[in-house]
Amino acid sequence: MPPLFVVGPEGKTSELVNYRVRGNHMVVDRLFAAAELRLGDAGSERRVRIVTAHAERLLATRACREYEPRFLAACTMYTSAEPCAMCAGAVYWAGIGRVVYGLAERRLKEVTGNHAENPTLDLPCRVVFAAGRRPIEVIGPLLEDEAAALHAGA
Ligand SMILES: [Zn+2]
Image 1 (cartoon, helix red, strand yellow):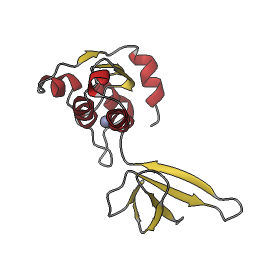
Image 2: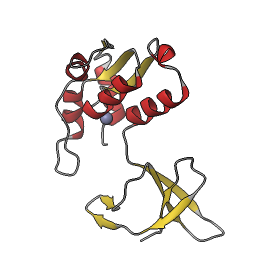
Image 3: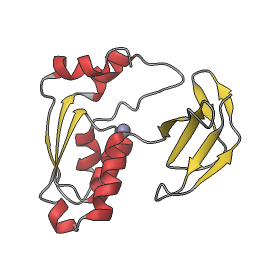
Image 4: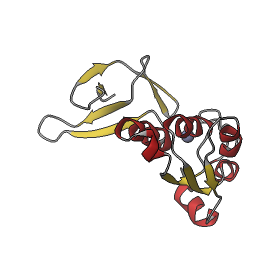
């Protein structure tokens, strides 16, 4: 198995860690935001970056680090698929004012299948946002067939 390095918060440091393989997943007994597999030898090393979070959550986290809440309230997150419950929570806490998505979460489940290694949460983002104290405009689903094509075979 190739060596796996957990990458520090700024991406400048890394630490070699142990892992085990279970099915299609690599299991690391630590919390981390990103890790890298280092393949090949010193002369031809190739690094493969692995992240543990969905893109929407990473974007929301990055946005609230870099921008003021007042600015984010006027921003729109565009995403090919409806944010899952975790990502919808991140959008809410980041203070992003609007979400536009292509493929509904329920339809994504139909495209990718529902298997034990990647269970989905069937909870529309509108339901998550409706439980909050700040309104978030939601536009979607839009162009679902085109958005589904991006996830086919995923
Ligand atoms: Zn998500």
